[in-house]
Length: 213
Ligand code: PCA
Image (cartoon, rainbow, N blue to C red; front, side, top):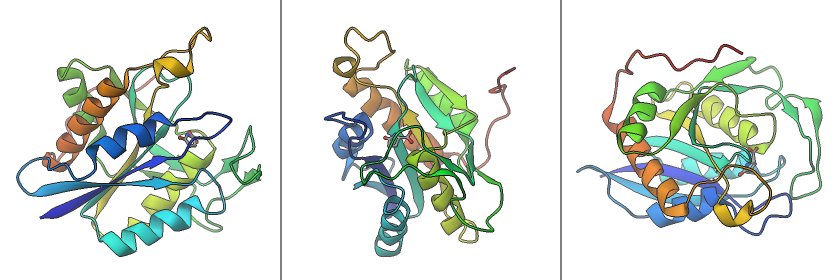
């Protein structure tokens, strides 16, 4: 049996829940396909600890695929991230009060890494399940981007495929605020379908997923 490691984040920025963790915890232990089981773990939302925590989990669990997830406030769909950049630029403090500005994630690392997941096939599979999804060209410059970059950096030589997905707020987080949201059960199902598509697709499909600006 193979393991797919799926991570979510603890709440941050005064939130009491983080939909990424609330969703992936529901998938913990689930078998997707005949030969693969999801193991879900929670990461701290802190620049100093999140990356090391993820790398320790990879060492411990020896997963065959890793997909990290996080909340993207303002996102309206399941956003399959394409690229992680070697830059921290925090608009708000993290959960340890750190707010790095224009620092690198990995000194002397490459400027960016691409996801090694079949992003287009994942978007198509989630949409076919009736759930909104798109390719996202940036995972931001906060802790999610750091985790995504550290993930790709750690696995670059390994042959283990990995990537990142941002999910929208839950409806109760944005009541009266005017931001988009997605019901938890929809996020859970969207992630399950995305994991399955990632696992089953070795060569990505070619389909437009870009943006004009
Ligand atoms: N979202 C933040 C960090 C943790 C999370 O869930 C981000 O997008 O960077």
